Image 1: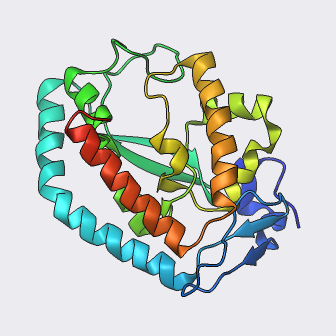
Image 2: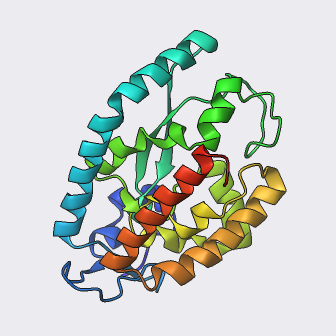
Length: 239
């Protein structure tokens, strides 16, 4: 079985329905690789998936008051909805709707990525983006099973298409669920745009391939903890 030629249509593809899924015991630290081969897909063990969904639910409940305040501030300081919704590709290329707090003004300007001093970003949005608070609604995606805590970051279609022109194997990222965080995400360029952003994602893809080939339960938990440290450093201006 192989991945479908067009991952956007993967949901209805017979090749997708017959794809082989490998599972690893949740209680072990054996590797749980992604991107290993285009013909194989990988799913986390069921127990670990449900633990992540439960943890996401608890975290979402804990940050709900903050989200309410932030959404109210977004509505009060710029026109438009407080929550940004966009369709992106997930496991096996299936489209799903991702949620973020809106950080930009409505615009028709065509540009991939957000640069330093980008006029589309609101003053509040710049702060939210730096602290990654705009990503918190994606805990809902983890609860729904669209994403996991750790996995390759889902990116906009136009950016993804440009990266795939340069690196056709980029579509092997569909072999596992997208995630809230990854090692590549912790070292990403926050202000890259257009061509620079494409180059940045090519580098991230190389990092993702190296990291996710050695994934395990311990790897996931460790990366979540590293992400927490990263965010604390950002809050105190050290990251």
